[in-house]
Image 1 (tube, rainbow, N blue to C red):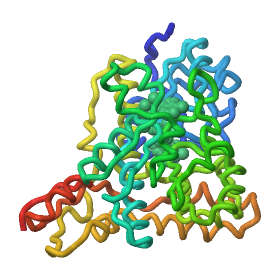
Image 2: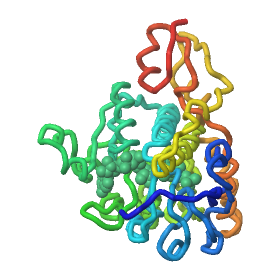
Image 3: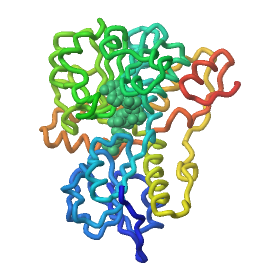
Image 4: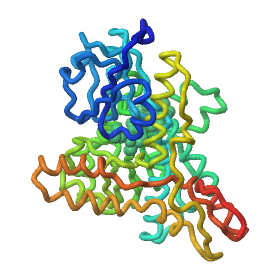
Length: 390
Ligand SMILES: NC(=O)c1ccc[n+]([C@@H]2O[C@H](COP(=O)([O-])OP(=O)(O)OC[C@H]3O[C@@H](n4cnc5c(N)ncnc54)[C@H](O)[C@@H]3O)[C@@H](O)[C@H]2O)c1
Ligand SMILES: O=C(O)[C@H](O)[C@H](O)COP(=O)(O)O
């Protein structure tokens, strides 16, 4: 890629999505930050801009950038399906995303969902097989925590399987085998439409029928990885299925008919821990400083405020769910989303974005040290809590 650091005497002009936190402490030392509404960003807002910082709701392509002065684009997200990276390379614009920034938040969303459903449906997670589709930053961290808890997993990731040694490749299975063998299926692939293993409508009318009786299907990746119309049809015929959707094919539109069939419905917030969001911005700051060959003046630790509650003592009888619920209860987000579903379509779309914009502070499990009896240590540690003796 033919990208050169920006050489400019005057302060940079930085155009940034208003939903990116910590722009001030990180980017105002570099230039003037202009906040914009990410979903509606237009070319004329990029006049004289040097940097463009976005989240996942801004389509960044040739039409937006050709002929502008932008030299660096960053997305403070893991997903990159909204960015035409080939166009950026052709235009000589440097690009950075934030791989892994909110992976732990997504893992904790899934763990919290599973522990809530285990209580409601009276099953023990350790007796269930969890199928993870997409075993990258999110999927592999989820795998590690589940295996430490003693849960059996099945893994499907053809790109990783293809690059693995024969020994490593044996850990993976095909999608159909996973759907047939797993009691719980959770999707963590990127959204891709091309290449050897495209994920658009990876889950569709043909393979939904492979799901086991009483299966749980979770999508916290990207909405179009599941054919939502096929899912609705299937769910009407299969009341035994439990669906959990954080992402939706027509996002920010959520069709009330599908939401009515979904047990836990949330507005694309699986990755919205404070740590995840701040790490996303900080990784862009780090990437830009590297690109511009500048020294960094802020560490991630300095950016992250202390949690309100940092330590909690649990009784020797306490199970996992009460501690998890203290930090994250997915039904809070489910209730907030459902309250918007009776609105006319356009207002519902706006409400979806508002829920995300005004998202309450949510901290990761690592922020809360638990005082526990010795016997409880293994499971709470496996979930990701720091633990200490009572
Ligand atoms: N809901 C949320 O808030 C949220 C938050 C973070 C990320 N995400 C989404 O989750 C996705 C995964 O995140 P990640 O950090 O683990 O990404 P990653 O790139 O680290 O891992 C993705 C994995 O999916 C695999 N994969 C690609 N095509 C596949 C296919 N056809 N079948 C099975 N596996 C396939 C890749 O080989 C890779 O190992 C992101 O791309 C993003 O779209 C959503
Ligand atoms: O890809 C990601 O990192 C996540 O999906 C992220 O949480 C999306 O958040 P948004 O950019 O829509 O605020």
